[in-house]
Image 1: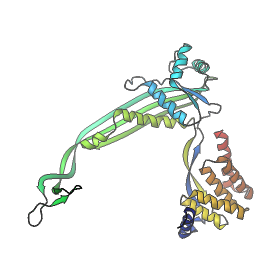
Image 2: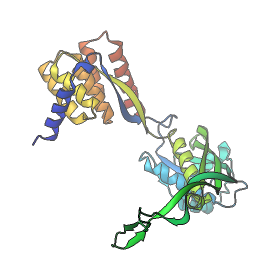
Image 3: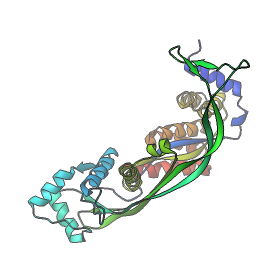
Image 4: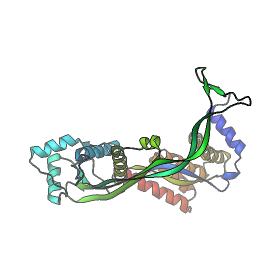
Length: 343
C-alpha cells in the first residue's frame, strides 16, 4: 500500500505538470499584523462599556466579552474586569464615558497598564415582520394508498410494525412567516495611558436577518439574547483586528523552476499537500542551488505556516540568484515589513 507522500506523488504525476509551466496561483492564509500602531502596548484594561437606553443587557457582561476576545489574541495581558472596578474604587476614581486625556492618564497610573479600552454600545435594535403566506406542500386528506385489489398498502416500520401508507396531495396552505432583523452599533477606542491620547478608534455596525415559515421553522430562529451575543461577538472581533494580529487570505503564484522536483512541489501544493511540496522544494535547493524558483516557492510555504523569519531567508536566497526580479524584491520587502510589525 502506498504511503501518504507516495500517494501524493502518484496523484501529481497522473494529473500532469503542464499546469505548472506558467506558474500556479494558490491561496494561503497568514497572520496580518495589527492595523493600528500598538507598539509598546502589552498590558491593557477594559473600562466599563457605556450602554445608553439599553436595559436588557449589562455593560459589565459586554466588557467581560471584550476582555475575553482580546485575551484570546495572546498579545496582551488583560486585567480582569472585577480587578479594574476594585482598583478604581480604592483610589476614588469615578469613571465617566468618554474619558478625557487627564482621566485616561489618571486611570493608567492607578491600574498600572499601558492602555485602556473603552467605548459605547450605542444601539441594539430587533425588528420583526410577521405575515401569512401561501405555500404549496403535501397535505394528507385522510385517504390511504391502495393496491389494484383495493387493499390498503402498508409499510414496515423500524420495529417491524405495519403502518398504512398515507396518500398526500399538493395543496396551497397558509402559514405564518416571520422575519427577524437586528442591528448593533459598537464604538470602541484604545488610549495610551502614558500620554492619554487615543491610538485606535473604530465603529462597527453589525446586522443580520433570520426568516422562518411555519411553527417548526419559527421555533428554530434565534432569540433576541442569542442575536445580541452573535452580533456583539462579530463587532468585537472586527475591532480586535485593529490591535492584534489576525488571519487573512492572500494569493501567491508558485513558480515551476528548472528542476523536476520544483515543478512536482508546485503540483503537490496545488492539491493542498503542502508538507510534501516543501520536501520537494528543499530537495530542489540542494540539487539545483542556482535555481531561484525553488527558494521562492519554499518561502511561500514558510509564509503559509507563519514562519516569517524562514520565509524571509528563502525569499532573500531567491533574490540573490535573480536580483533583477521585482517579484522577489516585493516578497523580501513584504516579509521584512511583516517581521518588523509583528515584533
